[in-house]
Length: 214
Image (cartoon, rainbow, N blue to C red; front, side, top):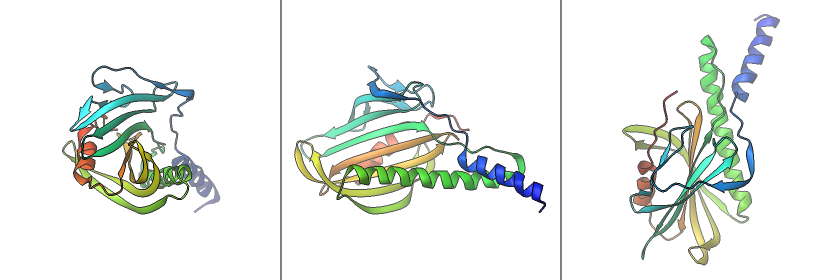
């Protein structure tokens, strides 16, 4: 390969790996979005209903000026179960696409996805000193008639939860490049001794993914 071709390829690789993401401009303080019914995030198409199975929506928050980065909280509290969840949607870094180098784009996305997941994992461990990462694995789940592939990490740590200081189990579930340019992130937390497999599946499958495919 000539020096010129090598230089061009190096530039392209750098662009692919860095991507050209839309950069949300963070607000100085997150703001509450008031919505009486189902809330549709116009930028991505994601819908946050008032309820998902036995979960009830608690609040919707936006974190940036352009309304690109938002979340919806959902709680499932009854006599037996106590589960708190938050669903986030925000822009994913999007590598460029240049003809024959599409394989490089795919590889670049995989690297960006890995880096994003690792960053969020470190964020959680930093916020909970003494917390432990118990599991980190790929996951697949049918959502909207399509099998979606993402990644899940499971943590255990102590915190004040549901009115008492206790050991909890918390999951980080992430799906990147949804519709080509969005990240969907789920945080689900509950007391460590509570069996919640069906409740977790209900939440993941119950929030509609109305994101146009890119």
